[in-house]
Length: 188
Image (tube, helix red, strand yellow):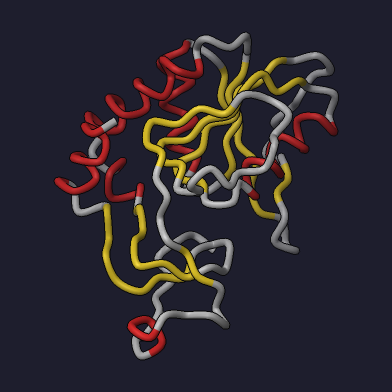
Protein backbone atom coordinates (compact mmCIF):
# COMPACT_ATOMS: atom_id res chain seq x y z
CA UNK A 1 0.00 0.00 0.00
CA UNK A 2 1.78 3.06 -1.30
CA UNK A 3 -0.01 5.40 1.10
CA UNK A 4 1.57 3.61 4.09
CA UNK A 5 5.08 4.00 2.65
CA UNK A 6 4.35 7.67 1.96
CA UNK A 7 3.36 8.12 5.62
CA UNK A 8 6.60 6.42 6.74
CA UNK A 9 8.56 8.89 4.60
CA UNK A 10 6.53 11.95 5.65
CA UNK A 11 7.00 11.17 9.36
CA UNK A 12 10.71 10.36 9.03
CA UNK A 13 9.99 6.78 10.11
CA UNK A 14 11.76 5.11 7.15
CA UNK A 15 15.42 5.44 8.10
CA UNK A 16 18.44 4.99 5.83
CA UNK A 17 21.89 4.00 7.09
CA UNK A 18 23.44 0.95 8.77
CA UNK A 19 21.18 -0.81 11.25
CA UNK A 20 21.21 -3.94 13.38
CA UNK A 21 17.74 -5.50 13.45
CA UNK A 22 16.25 -7.40 16.40
CA UNK A 23 17.00 -10.59 14.45
CA UNK A 24 20.72 -9.73 14.50
CA UNK A 25 20.76 -9.13 10.76
CA UNK A 26 22.10 -5.85 9.35
CA UNK A 27 20.21 -3.61 6.93
CA UNK A 28 20.44 -0.27 5.13
CA UNK A 29 16.78 0.51 5.89
CA UNK A 30 14.87 0.57 9.15
CA UNK A 31 11.15 1.07 9.71
CA UNK A 32 10.90 3.00 12.99
CA UNK A 33 7.19 2.54 13.62
CA UNK A 34 7.39 4.51 16.87
CA UNK A 35 7.96 7.66 14.79
CA UNK A 36 5.02 6.81 12.54
CA UNK A 37 2.69 5.91 15.42
CA UNK A 38 3.52 8.89 17.66
CA UNK A 39 0.88 10.85 15.75
CA UNK A 40 -2.42 9.49 17.09
CA UNK A 41 -4.34 10.34 13.91
CA UNK A 42 -1.81 8.51 11.72
CA UNK A 43 -1.75 5.56 14.15
CA UNK A 44 -5.54 5.33 14.02
CA UNK A 45 -5.53 5.49 10.22
CA UNK A 46 -2.76 2.95 9.58
CA UNK A 47 -3.91 0.52 12.27
CA UNK A 48 -7.46 0.90 10.99
CA UNK A 49 -6.27 -0.40 7.61
CA UNK A 50 -4.64 -3.36 9.35
CA UNK A 51 -7.82 -3.92 11.40
CA UNK A 52 -9.79 -4.08 8.13
CA UNK A 53 -7.57 -6.97 7.00
CA UNK A 54 -7.55 -8.78 10.37
CA UNK A 55 -11.27 -8.21 10.99
CA UNK A 56 -12.07 -10.82 8.35
CA UNK A 57 -10.87 -13.53 10.73
CA UNK A 58 -12.90 -14.85 13.65
CA UNK A 59 -11.40 -13.57 16.91
CA UNK A 60 -12.50 -12.13 20.22
CA UNK A 61 -9.09 -10.83 21.32
CA UNK A 62 -6.05 -9.10 19.84
CA UNK A 63 -2.60 -9.96 21.19
CA UNK A 64 0.65 -8.26 20.29
CA UNK A 65 4.32 -8.68 21.18
CA UNK A 66 5.88 -5.83 23.15
CA UNK A 67 7.21 -3.27 22.64
CA UNK A 68 6.62 -2.39 19.00
CA UNK A 69 3.31 -4.19 18.66
CA UNK A 70 1.56 -2.66 21.67
CA UNK A 71 0.28 0.49 19.96
CA UNK A 72 -0.58 -1.50 16.84
CA UNK A 73 -2.47 -4.11 18.85
CA UNK A 74 -4.33 -1.52 20.92
CA UNK A 75 -5.43 0.43 17.84
CA UNK A 76 -6.42 -2.72 15.92
CA UNK A 77 -8.45 -3.88 18.94
CA UNK A 78 -10.10 -0.45 19.24
CA UNK A 79 -11.13 -0.53 15.58
CA UNK A 80 -12.46 -4.08 15.92
CA UNK A 81 -14.14 -3.49 19.28
CA UNK A 82 -12.07 -6.30 20.85
CA UNK A 83 -10.00 -6.83 23.98
CA UNK A 84 -6.24 -6.33 23.65
CA UNK A 85 -3.45 -8.00 25.61
CA UNK A 86 0.28 -8.15 24.99
CA UNK A 87 3.21 -10.48 25.55
CA UNK A 88 6.35 -8.93 26.96
CA UNK A 89 9.97 -9.88 27.48
CA UNK A 90 10.90 -12.09 30.39
CA UNK A 91 14.32 -11.90 32.00
CA UNK A 92 15.80 -14.40 29.51
CA UNK A 93 14.74 -12.53 26.36
CA UNK A 94 11.67 -14.65 25.57
CA UNK A 95 8.05 -13.53 25.71
CA UNK A 96 5.47 -14.17 28.45
CA UNK A 97 2.07 -12.85 29.38
CA UNK A 98 1.69 -11.26 32.81
CA UNK A 99 -0.01 -8.19 34.35
CA UNK A 100 -3.07 -10.35 35.05
CA UNK A 101 -3.75 -11.07 31.37
CA UNK A 102 -5.45 -14.39 30.75
CA UNK A 103 -6.02 -16.66 27.78
CA UNK A 104 -9.02 -18.94 28.02
CA UNK A 105 -9.05 -22.37 26.36
CA UNK A 106 -10.69 -22.00 22.96
CA UNK A 107 -10.41 -18.19 22.97
CA UNK A 108 -9.77 -16.90 19.44
CA UNK A 109 -7.00 -14.38 18.73
CA UNK A 110 -5.44 -12.29 16.01
CA UNK A 111 -1.81 -11.25 16.46
CA UNK A 112 -0.93 -7.64 15.55
CA UNK A 113 2.69 -6.50 15.07
CA UNK A 114 4.44 -3.44 13.67
CA UNK A 115 7.26 -4.87 11.48
CA UNK A 116 8.36 -8.43 10.73
CA UNK A 117 11.62 -9.56 9.16
CA UNK A 118 11.88 -13.21 10.18
CA UNK A 119 8.66 -13.40 12.19
CA UNK A 120 10.27 -14.56 15.44
CA UNK A 121 8.21 -12.46 17.84
CA UNK A 122 4.98 -13.25 15.98
CA UNK A 123 5.81 -16.94 16.17
CA UNK A 124 6.56 -16.69 19.92
CA UNK A 125 3.29 -14.84 20.51
CA UNK A 126 1.32 -17.45 18.57
CA UNK A 127 2.96 -20.20 20.63
CA UNK A 128 2.03 -18.46 23.89
CA UNK A 129 -1.62 -18.38 22.82
CA UNK A 130 -1.53 -22.05 21.81
CA UNK A 131 0.29 -23.08 25.01
CA UNK A 132 -2.60 -21.56 26.97
CA UNK A 133 -5.23 -23.40 24.90
CA UNK A 134 -6.14 -20.43 22.72
CA UNK A 135 -6.58 -20.41 18.94
CA UNK A 136 -4.82 -18.01 16.58
CA UNK A 137 -7.07 -17.19 13.62
CA UNK A 138 -4.57 -14.90 11.86
CA UNK A 139 -1.56 -12.65 12.31
CA UNK A 140 -0.69 -9.37 10.67
CA UNK A 141 1.76 -6.49 10.61
CA UNK A 142 2.03 -3.02 9.19
CA UNK A 143 5.26 -3.95 7.36
CA UNK A 144 6.42 -7.37 6.17
CA UNK A 145 10.03 -6.82 5.16
CA UNK A 146 10.78 -10.55 4.78
CA UNK A 147 10.58 -10.71 1.00
CA UNK A 148 8.46 -13.85 1.36
CA UNK A 149 10.81 -15.49 3.85
CA UNK A 150 8.42 -15.80 6.80
CA UNK A 151 7.89 -19.17 8.47
CA UNK A 152 4.57 -20.99 8.29
CA UNK A 153 2.73 -19.59 11.29
CA UNK A 154 -0.01 -22.20 11.03
CA UNK A 155 -2.52 -19.41 10.33
CA UNK A 156 -3.02 -16.74 7.66
CA UNK A 157 -0.66 -13.75 7.71
CA UNK A 158 -1.53 -10.30 6.29
CA UNK A 159 0.33 -7.00 6.05
CA UNK A 160 -0.15 -3.51 4.66
CA UNK A 161 3.29 -3.32 3.04
CA UNK A 162 5.33 -6.21 1.68
CA UNK A 163 8.93 -5.50 0.80
CA UNK A 164 12.08 -7.41 0.06
CA UNK A 165 14.52 -5.29 2.06
CA UNK A 166 18.12 -6.45 1.83
CA UNK A 167 19.49 -7.91 5.04
CA UNK A 168 22.96 -9.22 5.77
CA UNK A 169 24.52 -11.63 8.23
CA UNK A 170 26.99 -9.78 10.49
CA UNK A 171 29.89 -11.86 9.16
CA UNK A 172 29.01 -11.17 5.52
CA UNK A 173 28.50 -7.41 5.24
CA UNK A 174 28.91 -5.56 1.93
CA UNK A 175 31.87 -3.16 1.73
CA UNK A 176 29.79 0.00 2.23
CA UNK A 177 28.45 -1.31 5.55
CA UNK A 178 31.74 -2.77 6.80
CA UNK A 179 33.21 0.69 7.20
CA UNK A 180 30.24 2.27 8.96
CA UNK A 181 29.02 2.19 12.54
CA UNK A 182 25.83 0.14 12.92
CA UNK A 183 23.08 1.49 15.13
CA UNK A 184 20.38 -0.50 16.87
CA UNK A 185 17.26 1.70 16.85
CA UNK A 186 14.84 -1.10 17.82
CA UNK A 187 13.55 -2.16 21.23
CA UNK A 188 15.97 -4.98 22.02
